Image (cartoon, rainbow, N blue to C red):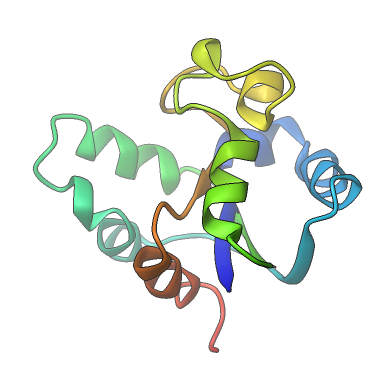
Length: 132
């Protein structure tokens, strides 16, 4: 099974890409692909289309296109759930101590990482970064 963990523009600006990757590796996650890119507005809208009708959609698109992002393909058994648990709650203040969002996040928007929430979304989201 594969999933996507995306390092968001706030983490890129903070220069903590390496720290996040190190934390993943130190905790035994198998990274099988890494790619940095900058989303166009159109790509970002497709990536986050599930939020299209929500009031924060425009702000989210502005944020995610503000700088580069890093897509990381991670493989393993039950990996979607394991990564979601590992990164913590969307709101960093509510995230369990020691999770990536707890350690580095500032707000619901600026929470340093995104992780696919279902196998289906993982398959769809991985295509934005990787061809397989």
